[in-house]
Image 1: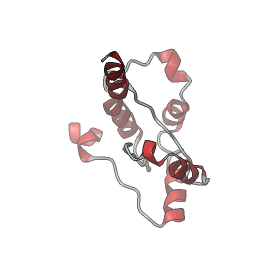
Image 2: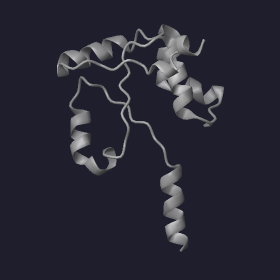
Image 3: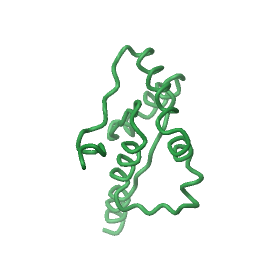
Image 4: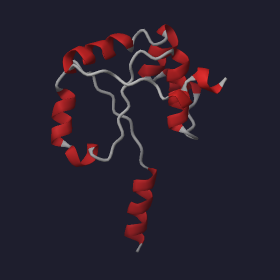
Length: 117
């Protein structure tokens, strides 16, 4: 039916990115309130990666999504990454490790610039 086709296409083509600060309980509240939504998500925990690795991960994850330079300027992460490398990410990962006692994963070797050269 048309309705089934619509939902199949919507599910296949809907993508979004959620960014939360580990300092607040907001992620915990959202994850308990919207468990079915978050159960189908993949989580990438960004720690103190190099700027090249962050950009490579973003490009790899976004695939063929086109983002114009004008739109890129409005994305908060683009400013943080381009102006200060991964410096703005490091304190966030350290705070989360302190809060949870767990270690943050490193970038997959296949996606690091060193592995490609």
